[in-house]
Amino acid sequence: MLEVRNLSKSFGGLKAVGDLSMSVAQGEFVGVIGPNGAGKTTVMNLVTGYMRPSSGDVLFEGKSLVGLAPYKISHRGVGRTFQVVRPFSEMSVEDNVMTGALFSGSRTNNLSKARKAAQLPMELTGLTHKRNMHAGALTLGEKKKLELARALATEPRLLLLDEVMGGVTRGEVDDLMVVLQRIHASGVTIVMIEHLVEVIMALSKRVVVLNFGQKLFEGTPADVVQHPAVIESYLGRSLEADAA
Image (cartoon, rainbow, N blue to C red):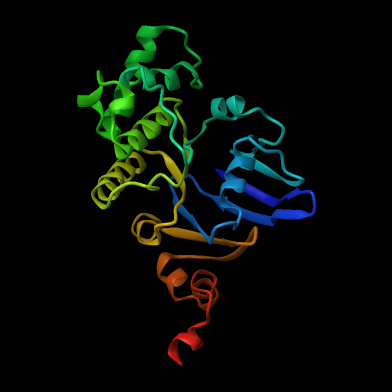
């Protein structure tokens, strides 16, 4: 479904992403982890058109996305969330989700159709009972769900999640994990960046580890947590040092 080929991005003399290749098959739930500054969000921005790569290519369902505006990539079937949620605070939850439907691949400007299209995203994210509440009155965890619902309303076949658990309580993390499992079970392929490694390990079948803009390791969650280079990149010391 998604293929990243030799992707690189430099900012002046700083290489944020270097010769990265990875692929995601339809129906997968792939986790992406790495230390701060590893290039995770930059990769997501390159895939979704918010940045243009210095070199390399991004293919979605066999067609290149490079050079397309973010809204055109969304119309192709690639949705995303952002680290910092920005709901329309004075609008209702339902109206917020409708904005996603209005800019979906269907590109409808019919409000009744957009309202109908907003129902399933609200159901999947558990927000139906909050539909008439102002978005500004939601908790952070609920705003994260709203971000997910709005992205789902764009009708993505591939959904990219950037730190969806960031800043929420432990209880909200558990709740969001159930929501993500429900979204994935509905048929949406997911690629998730997350600092909470235990969340990635619980939800993902395959994990890609980035460090200094390059792929450090790729494998199952069980393989990742046992790999010496991965442990060292997070702990700042080797396994041998821990054992000493």
